Amino acid sequence: MKQRYGKLVRDNIPNIIRANGETPNVRIMNTDEYRRELLYKLIEEAEEVRQAGYDPDGIEFVTELADLAEVLDAVFVEFEIKQDLLEKLREDRKSERGGFAERIFLESVQ
Image (cartoon, rainbow, N blue to C red; front, side):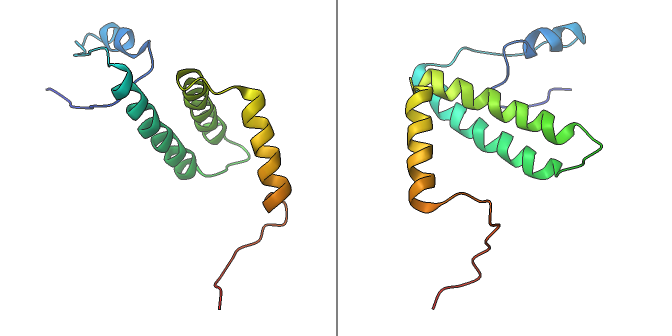
């Protein structure tokens, strides 16, 4: 039975599929397509983190965070974003707007 995926996958996934006795149908993306798919993958992995929820006795949440971190690393490389620039901008935003330590939930504004 043919299963359709239509998404960016990790480099070893085709080999894992072959090892399971199945045949993957893959292609190499051009730069524009790869960049678009990386950003879709970022959303996909963030949603998987949210769905995993936090379980202090489980590892699924942290595993999903690791997947998200891997995609972020790929985004930094592909878009040539320097870690020090990212950190500076993160610190600037935190200084200007604050962090999340106070757990503020905005209900509404009048």
